[in-house]
Image (cartoon, rainbow, N blue to C red; front, side, top):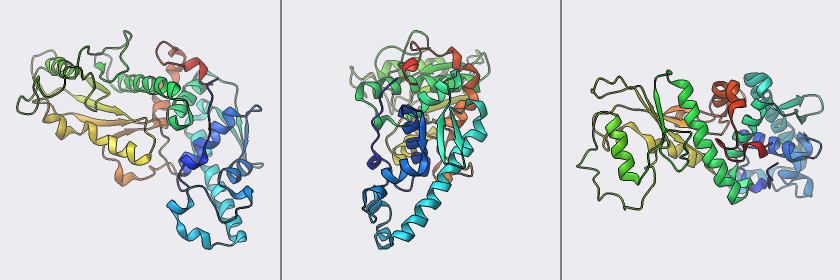
Amino acid sequence: MLPVILDSSKVKRRSLYRWADFVELFCLNDPDGEAPLEETLREAWGFETGLASNFACQEEDDPNETDLERPEYEDKINTEIIDLLKHFQLREQLLGDAYPFTIDPNDLVLIKKPASDSHRLYIYILRAANLAFHTKEDEKALTTGFERIAYHVLEELMPPSAKVALFGTAGHNEYKCYPGNKYTKLCAFADEMGTRLDRENINEHTYAAQDTGDDGLDVAAWYPFNDKATHFPLFLAQAGCTASEKGMLDKQFEVDAHSWGQRIRQIWPLSMMVTPQCYRQANGRWEQPAKIVTVFIDRIRIMILLRTKAGEFTDKKLPLYSEAV
């Protein structure tokens, strides 16, 4: 199993959806496959160290918490542990048997289930959402794997005759992708759209010859009518394995329809964010709905789309897949 090095200082105090991930990873890493919420979180939050006025990242989140007395801290922690329990219950409710943990609401313990195919996929995505707790080598493999997961997400959303292509560094002969440098990739993609690059904004001198990047586009999917006319139904997706919530939300704009319309003539894309985060409040709504400006596919939606296909994934498609659990 891939090692995980948990560090509570890397999780913002207010981000309960991230703390839910922290507990799941703790459970995954525990020899007995269990994570008692109170013990795990009190230690992570600095409460069991005797520093009753010190939480991880407390000053950044709410400097006024230093004024609370210990009984008030007790009430606050107990309330947040119950709120966190609701996150696990939501995940189990939405995913059913595909959720790889069992919740004991009486003893407040998360328990790992024996791994099934759908559990492996969930845990792989969980790891991709928490790259900071993995080695640099594993981080690179998980990022590559998640870009390919995004490919399969778009494949599921589009009709069977649609085309899907990888643009990032996750290219592989099992997937449609474009070889060459960034300019060559964009030219080939525009040609498939029945159009061309906007020469006023992009030409062969825009990018360095050795630049093999993706210009912020990880995966594209479109329905080709093969009638030589433009304006296909087109999705442009960013696969966001980011270390922070702000980074994830900012990445939405890398596939902004307006900016891509300035690169390639006569396209009207729909932008999409595919993220490994379970970006939810305990009631199932988005954490910050006002900041979501694209079609948004998070861990829950990925699992809904791909859970029946989890058994088809291998290390060849998703690096380190067999080692994730």
